[in-house]
Amino acid sequence: MTLRVDLVVPVKPLPRAKTRLRGAADGGVGDLDAHQRLALALARDTVAAAVAATAVRHVLVISSDPAVAMEVGALGAEVVTDPGRRLNGALRHGAALLRSRDPHAALGALQADLPALRPAELDDAVAAAAVLFAAGATRAFQPDAPGEGTTLLLVAPGHDLDPHFGRGSAARHSASGARPLPGDRPGLRRDVDTAADLDDAVALGVGTWTRAVVDARHGPPATPHPPGCPPPGDAVARRCGTPRT
Image 1 (cartoon, helix red, strand yellow):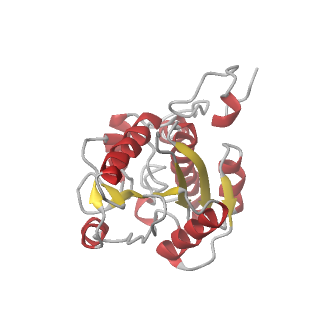
Image 2 (cartoon, rainbow, N blue to C red):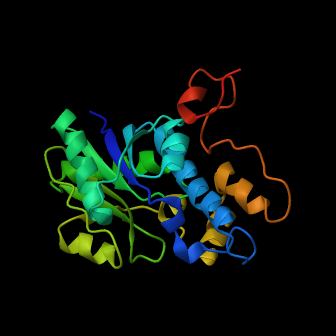
């Protein structure tokens, strides 16, 4: 049977999100509104790609920010209030909620700052995890581009998510028994914490919400259209947040 997962995606309130990126949206000025537009764009592109992935059954966003709730909810994600237990506590809260609905669900935790993520990369990651699970592993993770952090954690049905996100999370996930996913998925590995990370993501090809913010530094923003989503008028366009014609 093909593995499908329910994902938890935590998103901080926009004024407190991605603080090391302050100034990246406006050429170093550091305007708070511009920064919040960038933080929201990163989350929207990430969630849009997750919702569009065939291997993802459900996306649960944990956030207390009303702008985040409105925008990612329009993409087809469910949004629940952050319980205020910091990152790993929020992930455990989301995982418990999903497991209460389906005790046999395969679960995952996805970082919300992956603007170059493609749905096919998530599908490939889940397929690679399924192979590891079939061989006896219970948890698997995707290291970030430097190899020190984690962008995706997956857990087999019937096992705890047991997240250890934060500085040095790749080593902590490995020490907790999680297996690194084989294969290279550049968009899934390229999380964005700094202006240099954003430049790297743009070089890979970011989603159009992030592209619109980046382009706005030099001209008018582009019309948002999520990566990997069908064109307007497609039967499943609404699922990706694209208006049907």
